[in-house]
Image 1 (cartoon, helix red, strand yellow):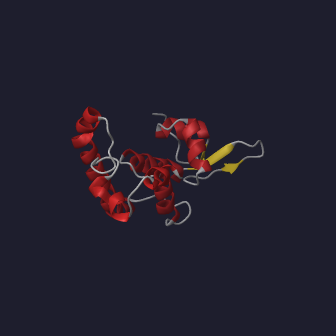
Image 2 (cartoon, helix red, strand yellow):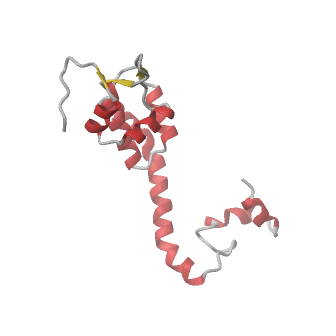
Image 3 (cartoon, one colour):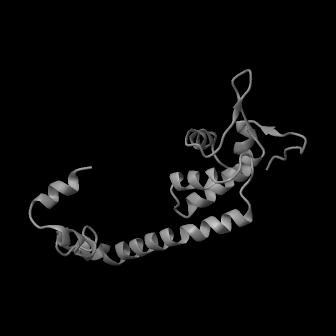
Length: 154
């Protein structure tokens, strides 16, 4: 991993990429989504402050556990400008995300446990399929062919 001298306060996109392990295109994407920021030089080159490395690590760790980028952006917006997320920040945010992650895990376990049955029958019955209609939530609202139209409407 390339070392960056302490006296250098701004990094090029290539340096951030090399140090963080994130592709240059990913860094550009993160910037377009408001997760990191840069300034432009007179030659229109991006320059990132050193705290960007910690922010990128924070984003990538949150992504690995399934946190959506919009949620990550909201979390980073709570931090003061140019302050890196600390261990305490991560602990606070991960606790807040725990309920969401537990629900996702529950859904994935249900999918895993019922996927074989679903593929085996192939019906995708709106009455009994635990994948397309868990706990018959649709049947509690209304009945009839309108359900199929309702489900296709964005």
